[in-house]
Amino acid sequence: MDNLPFVRNSLEWVAYFQQNAAELRVIPWESGANVTEAELSAIAASLRGWQLGETSDGSHLLAAARHYASAIGDPDFIDAVRFFIAEEQRHGGNLGHFLDLAGVERANSDWGDSLFRAIRYALPRMEVWATPVVMVETHAMVYYNAVRRATGSPVLRAICEQILADEVAHIRFQCERLAILHRRRPRWLHNVTMGLHRVLFAGIMVAVWMGPAGVAGRRL
Image (cartoon, rainbow, N blue to C red; front, top):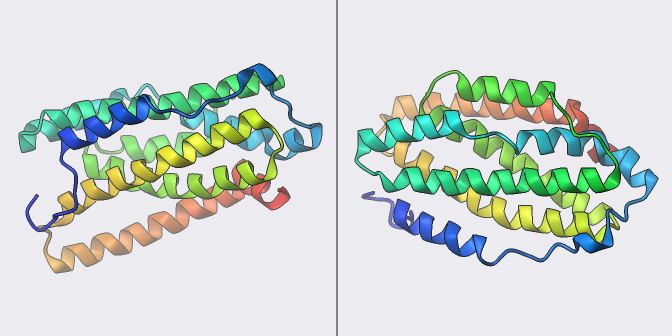
């Protein structure tokens, strides 16, 4: 990782994820959903979509991680990715539990989630995975912060606070990997890559804005 002095190695990321798992915020499940009908009307559809997106089994990502780790000789990267997947699944589990408490049926499909998965599954390469993930998680930071500030539910606020804390590290994890992948790329190719990233980011932003999350944001 020459010329990238602030990048954590895979073992350091494994240690971070392990410590984070041991220091989770307390979620007051005993208080119930404690959410108003007005709040549910505004956020239920978007929460269902985000919850579905957080529940992937991670098998495709692990396959890409194994191939990449083998190519660069870094088997610890696979464990780091496993912990990353576990945190995302924890987010999905907590959101799902909240929906259950609120009497909201969980989503089985969502067009935005399906589109996102199609992008990730296009090629089994880490760059193809990390790029859309960091873009979506950037939007997730905005969404969960808006929900946290808008809701009076102690449970939902605690869930959002935990997700926001986790996502800061998730974005760094993905950005560091992209920096490693891009560090020896010729300037012209780097410029092309950045141009494609801007187009993809704009597309994801429009998709989020037009989808349930965007509708919720305009109503909160």
